[in-house]
Length: 248
Image 1 (cartoon, rainbow, N blue to C red):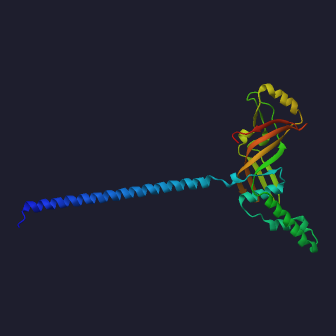
Image 2 (cartoon, rainbow, N blue to C red):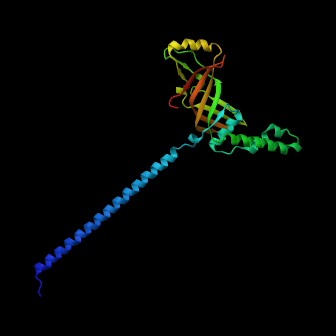
Image 3 (spheres, helix red, strand yellow):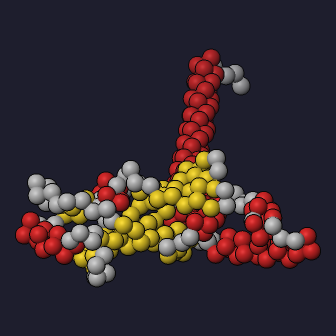
């Protein structure tokens, strides 16, 4: 049977259209798959970024809950080494200790062991410490009637508390000193407070949360936030006020 030219052309046209539709479906499916893959990758990337940020923002210092109360100089030096994450040079400190240096030869081994035990116990005692509580002179200013406040100058940003031991010097500074130094008191109460303090001044029991560390040769600086303090008159030791600083 002879096939007409019109029939051949019609059949070819139908086949061509069918192939084109098939190709479009395939392209559409491929595009959808690529879009889904990109979306999933973006989701995974966002989740990964969020997780990394959470880990990064979780400061190890915020997990330290132990406290030191009026520590001696050597304890703060040990604390500095513990926070920085550097092993303290205990071998050197043992040899430099006068009990070892000036001990008779037969006694040196026993002295070394005793001094080493003391230093290792001191190093272990500051692990997990993140708060230091100090008693210090408040260096309280005169009352300022314009701003209705006293200034606790011991807590100013420029104030430094220094600990010197074991050939190292470690300083404490107050990151939030601008806020911590201000003690606001109404004018109506200011004169009674001045009368109570008199010439004896006032002492300060202050809690300091360690927020960061600044290493330096032969020591460094522990940067702290003042979280709260209690002001006491030196004459009777009675509390004058208790203050929580900012949102601490």
